[in-house]
Image: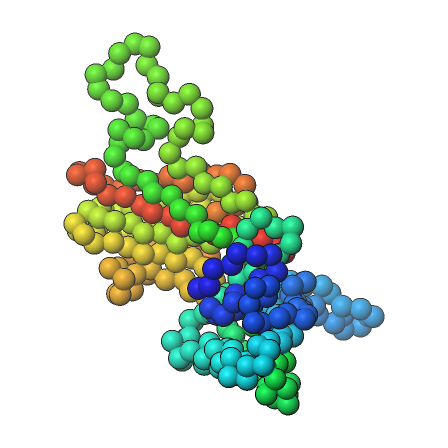
Length: 300
């Protein structure tokens, strides 16, 4: 992953383009509304259609780029080769579900945002000027998720220790009884999604723990697991579309441990501020849950 330091820079699968690089971007298309999968049904005896559910499909970002290395044909061709290698990366190309990342810092935005997908076409328009260090090319990135995601990745870690739970008290109790918490800002479990779309979190529950349950207070959505983890064991949960799974110790799938009320496709961090809570059985008070997410946006 390249380091983006300037506005208008674009990192495509690890290749940095834009100001300060040999890749001069002439035009970018595809940052607007993604293609739509309309499900309208024609009215059988009348004009018009019955509107159905419309879903977004993929988003194709097309960039017209010139590789510029004045008087250095070798450097220009090296720049083209770097893009070819990124597009042919077998770790992504030959693995179902594996994704490249497109990252961009745009004028008027304080941070970097990203798309997930696959680097597709890398086509040189002509090599006639390569001798002089100039190679015009077209680069296409096919985003499988049309939403934009923020950087850096946000995270929250919560222990199960009841002495840190806002619903518990520590003995001995002394009047007047208070929670010790003056404002919601000081409580554990608050998360903030600064985008305008729900964010898909990933979770890791570390043992020893039995029958963990985690939920978002504002939405009421719950993930509950009929499972026991020993010391050093962990449960990884991914909720993002196209990559939803539940793994024990990073390998074996234990999706069957999810209870009937648990829906990975409904467990999101809503826009704005919300609270995460969890419960489980752990007599050592050493287990913890780690939640990670990226703010999600409709537009760049």
